[in-house]
Length: 454
Image (cartoon, rainbow, N blue to C red):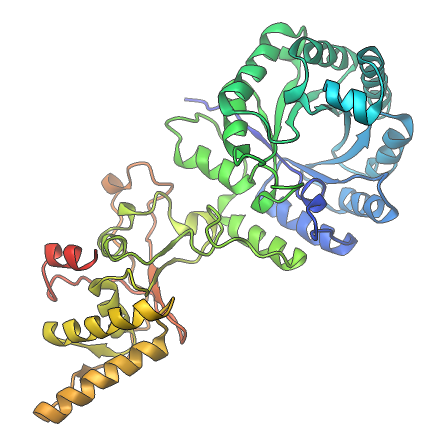
């Protein structure tokens, strides 16, 4: 069955850059634009040319150097902004002028100090002027979700008639609920003359943590472009996260019957590059690209991961460009992961010895946040020394594992995961990480390990 194509409009270089502390210079923007091109986004909003000479040069440089995607520049609904945007964009293979004007009564009264009638005329005139310069024109009624719906329909109808090819519906202050936002998109499709001839776009902010949910609700009601950013950066609490939107549609293809052109294996690299450029780290529990997104500490989770990663991971780390999963040793870990890390460090123990190490490990893990390899080696050495003194023998020691042995992933087990490639994992410590998967059935029964993992 053919699936509708969703255009991914990346505004990391414009709205994302407006995050406090996330500004980028021309070379940094150009470097990230090339990465966004590799990622496969359809539209790159390169900046706001009227804002500064630096932003103008960045848009102009990206327009000249990045040829596959559409390159967009933002402009307020006034002649000077539109002209400046076109000067920066005219060297692009696929230019787009993105015009915006606030439409909510609170913005009209307190910010713009104009009437609804003046707003309508200004929006129409700005789009008409942009259209005279560039075939591809997008219009955004800023604060659309707090705009009177009847007036919003009027404005949208006017800019469509003036030549807009894309109409974007911003939830500028992150106010909407998913059902509410979806209903707004549906209302526009039902009531605006000519709306079927243009692309409807979403642009949702995350002030209530609903940017991705609202974007997906809009898509389900007929929006065919989503505006988003890498790592969800942007004004205040940020924008809808590109990686979360793409992977939600890819993992839950049963609910979201849509396709994107994004090469998801480049998501992690894009996230890391942005963090490096802006010096703003990704929060550890960030979906898809955070360092904990594929990390497991709880014993029950670790045990399940070692038996079949699909027990606790709904996509493979490789599908988003993360090298592998990590089993982190902490106070919630079980013996299964502990035994694997001991083997990776070159030690193999009988059940009774492992029990003793595990008891010491739990006491230590209660006192510190994460047990490093150095701590674990001290525990191992204590047990080895005690055993040697008591029996004159020593635990079996062998060289640390170096090979990567994949987790088994069968087609029947995939059940909705993104891909069925091998799925390696690593148990992390401070001194090196080996990627191995070893069956532990000979150590103890599955049920015992499950109970010990609690």
